Amino acid sequence: MTSHTDLKPLLSIIVIAYDMPRQALNTLISLSPGYQEGVDAGDYEVIVVENRSRRNMDAQAISQLPGNFRYFLRDEPGVSPAGAINFGFSQARGRYIGLMIDGARMVTPGVVQYALMAFRMTPEAMVVVPGYHLGEDDQQYHLTKGYTEAVEQQLLANIGWPSAPGSGYRLFDVSCWSAANPHGYFHPFMECNCLFMDAEIFRDIGQADERFAMAGGGSLNLFIYRKTAMHPRTRSVMLVGEGSFHQLHGGVTTSEFEGRDDLLKQQNDQLCELLGYPFRSPTLEPILLGQVKAPSMRYMHRSIERGMDRVKRCAMRKEDPFADQAKKIAETSA
Image 1 (tube, helix red, strand yellow):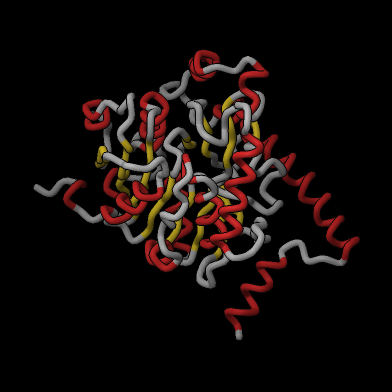
Image 2: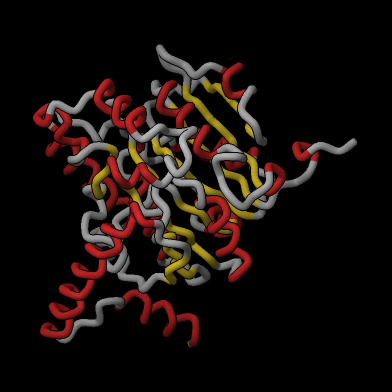
């Protein structure tokens, strides 16, 4: 008898973890069949790559999850996830891949279903899942605001996550926008921590550039997002009713600590150096895909308000709000 693990999946989701066993397991639970709606276990695989730390994940707990999970524990000599990403990509069997560079991000139940739907619409889809932070405030202010892992765990308990009906979308009730993309769906995104694309596109952009050797990869995520967004064979598809939700874990750019501003400047300097030009968020007009459940409607409402403000400002300045979109169309038509 052939099991789903013997079949080649259409989608490979690569999750990178380091020193976050509880948070990463939550992420994997949110990616498992049963939690993810409208898909079968054989449709996708999840490749978990963990760089060894003082607190590794429980391999047995991963093996007991329903679905197609493969776990790799690596001895990484550096402090960047770039090598782990490329290793995970070397193991991927799907035509399409999902990248979750930060394994501490739980997702809503329609992410896999709508990602696959986007690829059925066009193999050129770059599927963007908007990012949020659990808690009332961006987690870089967690010390000032008194936000702790214990507070976060209580928030999840209050909504009955993951087993209570509807709790997957009630993550919107206990979250806020990520500071990287605080204005919503109609503003240019700086990055995406749950990103899907054709595997050939990822190979074409050079995969994860291992020159991003700073802790946490520095601005690697921004680099990958911009390179993918500006690739001539991608079309941005935004899953407006879905989300990836960051859990507090002491991350490099999502924590409050002395010297954070200096570190961010160093990361940006490296990003601009490796891009070869000053970084800016790509101005693309996304295809909107998905159902907007009631808990996420406040984010849609705010996105529309902020989007209308931006369009008015661009009109006053006689600027195209989606100039990069027009540039890509012109280049591909030439």
